Image (tube, rainbow, N blue to C red; front, side, top):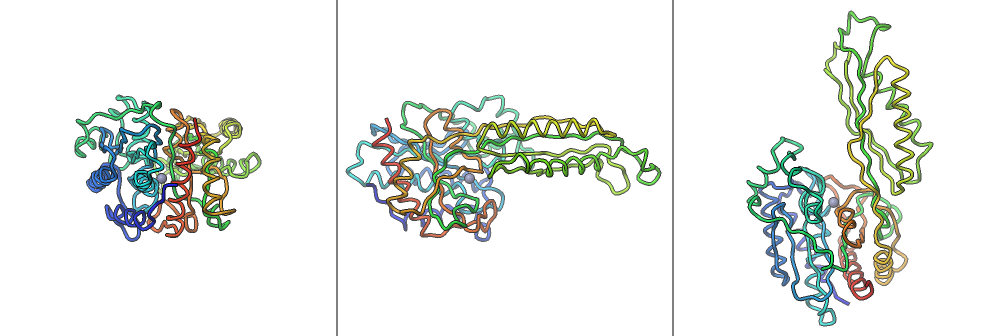
Length: 409
Ligand SMILES: [Zn+2]
């Protein structure tokens, strides 16, 4: 079994966190100067581990192993959320690097190759899963032309140019090259932390369905417009939002979640009756049938609001990702490795967050492993995990990778 060096893993994670350090977390948006610097550092580390590193035209850092007979691709993303945590994404990338080293140091694993990927922009500073979609042929050129930064509207082409990536070719997957794809990540939720368990085996990455709902009323003077005459889009939106929150619990599963995370009022002024309002509704579940039930219910609530008046109500689908089951053989091998190193301290669970593994799973068998997030906090600079869990996770992951390389045909 390849043996990991826990101190080396922790030291590399801490070094990577220096790129864009913010308090105890990291601020490293995709294609920012510090992100580009960190990608060059990663490429160098992959080279030192004996891999052939390349940074491609979308920013993916990939370390190839040309000589192996059977290969696993291991990765995650290396940019962070704004003022985010030091482990989100980075953990899976550094685990990949450590596995490449541990496999190279183990004579019993000479025929196996670990290839490592740090995907670009999983966190959506520009698009969604740009790096892993580019690698799996799911990112067309015209989407790159049209994509802009979510904060300042910088065209993606310009950001790639400034990052020194524009002239580089984009690496594409050859699925035949791999037994499959493995990704480790912090859980980000609190399921493992509150149950005192140390390893999570991901069964499914949830589907995420997003909608924009518009309420169309009549903008008018907040003093002279009598209440009976008003078509207040703000009131209509609040009523509908309340209906949604009242009705969804009746159709929810144990782990269904829904969020109204963005609302807008026009013109959003104290003395004007709002003429237009908009909210975005999102729900997530591992069961596609349940997602369909939620969608039907949302459409019914919107029609009901529209019929009730006085404001018109419209719904538009923004994006729907399917739930992606992880390969059952990979789940079994991760579980067997977890049982060896942390007996009875592991569980199977869905991933409530989206991950690159969902994208990769369309092209090859994929699996995911979680370690606990302290208090379930993530996407915040205070995100953290116990050092002993980081080290244990790396060893379980290495063991699982070897089991998969030996057993899965
Ligand atoms: Zn992440």
